[in-house]
Length: 132
Image 1 (tube, rainbow, N blue to C red):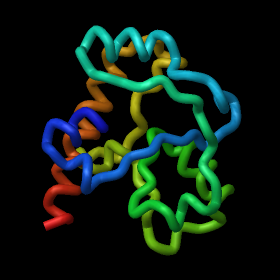
Image 2 (image 1 turned 135 degrees about the vertical axis):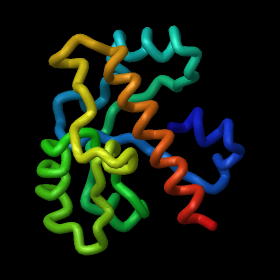
Image 3 (image 1 turned 90 degrees about the vertical axis):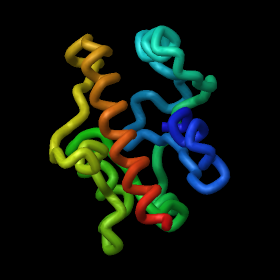
């Protein structure tokens, strides 16, 4: 998403952060097969340490985009509620209410990448229209 936003010249208008809804990966860098897929696709990325979302993130961000229904349930445990309707599945922006294919379970990073590209393109289109 950051790469798409940068290519549109919108990095100064759209701020993106990544956070987990669970604690399993806190402090870990990106999963190595995901890093290999991004490298193969020519998508730049930065090294990072995973962090968990916090209750204060609800007020910090306009949208909280999640990959799976499970993530929505986890986020609601942290936020307690979603009065402003900020919690969205990424694929909703592509007109599909479904989870991103999880490569942790499927081992299929190509399918996950395709889902993410489709969802991120649709999200970026939405943000460009809603920002006008």
